[in-house]
Image (tube, helix red, strand yellow):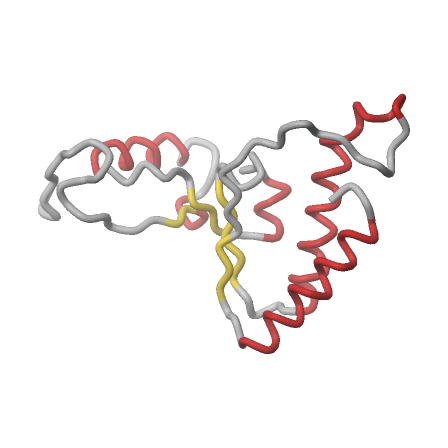
Length: 142
């Protein structure tokens, strides 16, 4: 993502898939930290720029996809590339805050998020009970 040719390739491939499959919603989720960060396009003395240039590449890709597909709703993820910030909100106006779907814990996550972000930015759903992470049974009437 630090190389413009990689961003170009991804933009073209993803745009074709979005058009061909008539996709109108994309959840951009990448629950993984970048390890062994390195860019072949940066010299040894510039490797410290990797993470900044990486996110500039992500923004560039989003800019192209959103521009070409304005009717697609992009949802980012708090762990999606480790980004849940106003820069991502510009392109993806909705975010999945956490994979923690326990109703009690999730309510606290969403409440705390409301201190910095409007509730309209929060993507959520109701999970099965008992919750697979905590074993808690929380009725919908709670």
